[in-house]
Length: 360
Image (cartoon, rainbow, N blue to C red):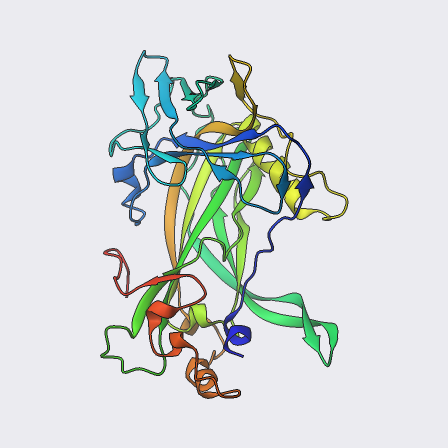
């Protein structure tokens, strides 16, 4: 029952099956004009530039395998070469707290895998169009239509939500701006059946899959509010204490935007009729007879804002039902462990260590 009560958002994995004996290298990478030190001011824990490498071939709803032992270099048109440091799970990081992309300079990603296969991106630069300062983030109250099981049948129900948006300032250029927004949610979870003085009472929880992965928009004039994501407000344990989202805005080239738009279109259509998320446009090529490569290396103009949300911000009352739900016992099993220890929280990763930037 607790599982039913606490679940308020769900992202279904995209299911596909491809029979292809030859593996494909998948590259996830970008640069922006904000350094690690600058992203601390959003505020956040900071973000290094990373490259994530994985390999996929004959796939049946399985995660790609991480590619380790690669050497990754970032080349610039000013004859600079920066080398990424290898971490865990096929992730490589550019551990320079001050480095960022600069106007007028080209950047190329070069990847040499363990088997000496070499892959290179095209030269990429920051978009030419000037981006206005990122607008404020707010919300409006609304309702979503959802399917719920009732008396053994699926019925359509209205669910109250807070619909988050970002304000796009009026534009001062005739050229369109290609936007992409990403989200990093965090919230406070308090275990209801333990003393508030207990160290295991209060946690900060994260789940990268709770909200949609990103939103897109081609903006030609500005002066309006762009809807981003919605949060259910009734029986949603994520908002019983305090909820926050780091919203990161990327302005990019038309080609990079098109890559993300095609990927989103493939994942959001009919599961039976869609082409799987392969064969997308890529700006990588190989100088050797290597495997296929998927992904796109882009350079973006980045801004970020942290948004805080409290249930008392709503015009109606939202009850914290966690304690009551934990006290409902079905059969011989005791209440769920997360009722007594916030570190056992099952809807994300939880820690008792509060971020230094958290706003009470």
